Length: 80
Image 1 (tube, helix red, strand yellow):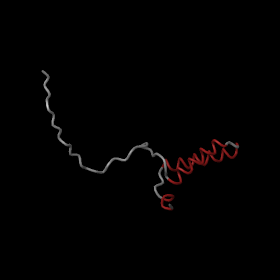
Image 2 (cartoon, one colour):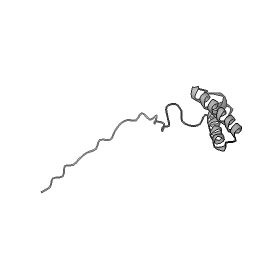
Image 3 (tube, rainbow, N blue to C red):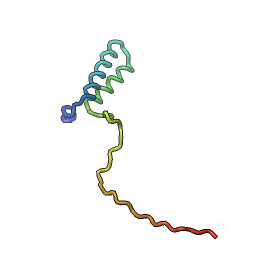
Image 4 (tube, rainbow, N blue to C red):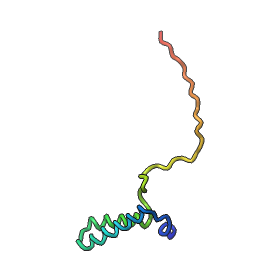
C-alpha cells in the first residue's frame, strides 16, 4: 500500500490532489457537505491512484496473440 502512495505520480494525479484539497478547504470554510464529499473523493482517488486515467476508462486488451480464425463451411440450400 505504501508503494501505491509513493509511486506513479503523474500530472493528473497531482491535479486531483490539488483540486480535492481546495474543495475540502472550501467545504470546511462554507460548511457545505456536498463539496466536502466531492473533495474527499478526489483526494482519495489521488492518494490511492484509483479511477480513470487520461485515456479514459476501458477494458484492458487481451495479451493473447492467438489470432487464428476457424474456417466456416457453408452449404448452399436450394429451394424447389
